[in-house]
Image 1: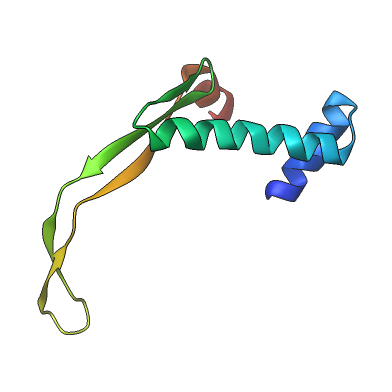
Image 2: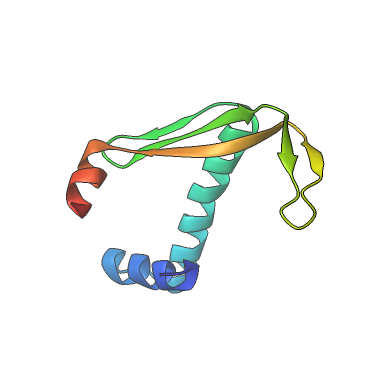
Length: 90
């Protein structure tokens, strides 16, 4: 499923137009993105939790040449599924 398919599903389920569904989905995604940018976390009970963690700098290896390379530290987004979501796919 891609974003367009999700918009169609939202519009059909909520009986709203595709434009309204697009605005609603974009508002949710923007809200999650904005909170993660500030270092916060977003918890949707039953669905899961989005959070940001820091991946430390480390030394890696170029698979083609075998040479050591430095990999910089960076922030990464994590998602931990909630119990209801986990149970629904098992």
